[in-house]
Amino acid sequence: MAETTVAPPRGSAPRHRASLPSLTGLRFLAALLVFLTHSTVLANPLQPTAPVGFFADHDIAGPLADLAGKAGAIGVSFFFVLSGFVLTWSATPGDRATAFWRRRGLKIYPNHVVTWALAMLLFASATPVHAWLSNLFLVHGFSNRIENLQSVNWPAWSLCAELLFYALFPLLVLAVRRIPETRLWLWAAGTAGGVVAVAALTPLVPGGADTGHGLTLNQYWFSYMFPPPRLFEFALGMVLARIVAAGRWPRIGLLPAAALFAGGYWLANVAPPPYYFSATTIVPVALVIGAAAASDLRGDDGWLGSRPMVWLGNVSFAFYMVQVLVVFYARRELLGAHTYGVAAALGLYAALFLANLLAAWLLHSLVERPVVRRWGRGRPRPAPEAPLPPPRTAPREPVPSGEPG
Image (cartoon, rainbow, N blue to C red; front, side, top):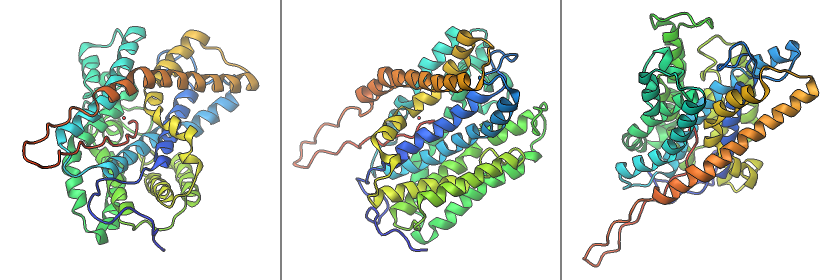
């Protein structure tokens, strides 16, 4: 297949890379996948006898929950690959590791602390100290104790993996830059293979209670929530960024990539756990991200890079972080366990989405954006006395959410 001819200059890492607005739009689609799972589950985790979905007809509610049930895990995998791509694409040679870590911390911790505090105030005050403390400091994903994994604002478990990615990124990016261009696709295949290998090895993980979903608790934790195995997805995103930057992305359009993603999603719905977490869709996810980036570099004006989608992408991390508060807590408090006919249920799904989006906009506007603007750049270094140009302050990189951050 022919390679795209429009790309940044070849080399390890140019100081300025072209913007990729379509990837910002993709961030929101990943967050939306998580929302679809959360908003259609049959039992509310905060009140197991009450539903979350709005359809009174179980012949509609049940299949809908089954169809959307795998979307959340795939959305999180999408976030991890996208995170590796965007951070590598925007990395600047000479940027200090401490400056990078400060920017990443300022991106994710304010939203996390606010949603953590609201969850503790509204419904999680009975959480054991060891569980809420580990959740606050985003280390609970390293524990296989159920009370830690499902504590406070539980979608924050994915931030444990993101923090591991950020901690290792200054070293990983040096290694990725050293990969010869002729071997980039081999490394991409190896990292994608690592995702499949984690799924294949999961049945060998011993111990843990039966979850009732074909995996023990230890197996579920190892293959889904334990941060180190998720490094394969992040590393795949890093290698994809090098492939696109080197002009070695084949001419695979977004439409064929999206069709392959749909096929991977179908496969996720028939594959056993843990393969549906990310293994069935890892290659299509990589193709969608690479195709979107290549499309931006060619100057194609696609809907993913439109102003509305970029705006939605910018609030996507907050959209992810408020879902427990809106979808599970607010739904329970305002509507109880009531379910409705088809027309009313569809209207309430639209209202739930808009309420979650409004809460995300408030969190992004009042917390995330002001903090990043105020402290994200840090102080510039003083100019030296010798007649040399002052050092440049490294630009902040665009951030994939979920990060979800």
